[in-house]
Length: 182
Ligand SMILES: [Zn+2]
Image 1 (cartoon, rainbow, N blue to C red):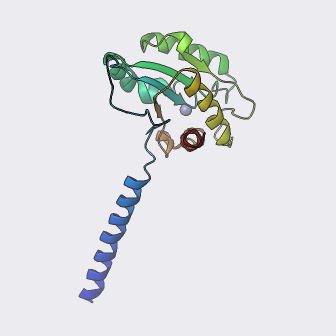
Image 2 (cartoon, rainbow, N blue to C red):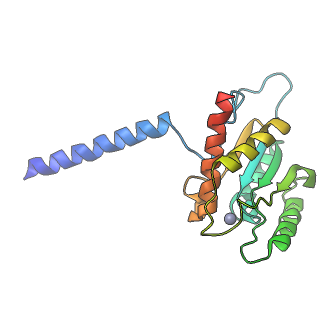
C-alpha cells in the first residue's frame, strides 16, 4: 500500500505546483493593476502614487484598511476612496456615510477625494447580489477622472466573507480586464 501513499503525495505536490503556477500566472490579489502604469517605476521627480481604495460599505475603510491607508499616507502617496454603497442594510445609510467622512479626517484623506455611491442596484445587504459590471464601470470612470495608477480593494473572499465585498473584488477585477481592452 506504500505505493498508494507515494502516489497520493506526488499527486498533492503536483496539484500544489499547478495551483501556485496558476496563481502566479493569473493573480487576483486585493491590489490590482488598472493599466500599464500600475506600479511602474517612478520616474523623474514623481515619488508618489495616486491610489484608489474601493470598498463596499462605510466602515470597511476603517475596519480593514486603516493601517494600510495611514502607512501609504506616511509614505506620501495620494489616496482616493470610493465606497460602493451607503451601508443602508439597517436603514442607517446616512449615519454610516457621515461616519465614513469623519473617519477620513483621522485617515488624513480629504473629503473631496472620497465618494460614497447610492446606486439602486448596489445596495448593502448579505442577500443583495451585485452585478460585477456596475462597480467595474463606475471604477473605470474614477480611474480616468482621477488619473489613478493603483487600486487597493477587498480580496476575493471579501476579507470577512460578505458577498458585497466579494462582488466588489470581482467588479474591480473586471474593470482591470476592461481597462486593458479600451
Ligand atoms: Zn462591508
